[in-house]
Length: 303
Image (cartoon, rainbow, N blue to C red; front, side, top):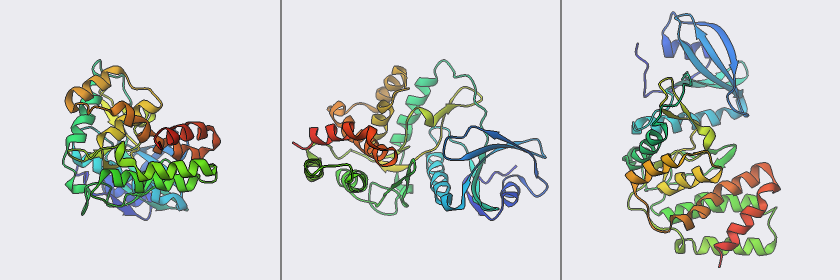
């Protein structure tokens, strides 16, 4: 059956999306609710041809989140280095937005799961990034989201400039309601001097963008699958730094990744600066719990 692997159709009904994915004679026999994260409703769709698809649904006002998710998954799929679900269609139906994709049954991890994940991510980070940008070296062809937060992806030729202007500055502006004047000044000094701390990579990398422990799984064969990306082209260290922010990654993952990718000296220092982006986004989304960590890192890198 032709699954139209590289085409994500925008549909005006779920019925149309199922037909696009599976053919004219296929319909939904049963819909079963499953856990799909806090933000969306999620369902297994049991089809008349015996197949199962995965449906995520939200309000119409949140349709752009599914557009961004579909584009991010398609970008990683195009790189062809690590598995992601195939997305077939997205659209609106009966007052809801939705995205329809391959259902992947979670299986027990293979013994070398972590090594596979590390090597697969390294291969993705080494892949050609030209397909994702019409101009510039860093960013993405369209803006997207980091969790529920808006993520600016304006293409730029400089990684340090991109990280300053498209990652930290927008978050700092949103967070000013939490900052006193000394923190605002420190944040400005950090942005003005960011090239003292970050470097320009030898080559850009396609990033997952939101790589924490909840955004990968094992498939029916026990091999790794990436889900829920906030994809863009950047420095590979930004992805690795986030894996260390909340934990959940085995040492074998890092050994496999760095064996393939190598380590640029000073990564341990830069790691906190990369994770400042995610911590400030969490501050803006979830409140003051994250303020002490954000302020500490800002002041550390503002001297």
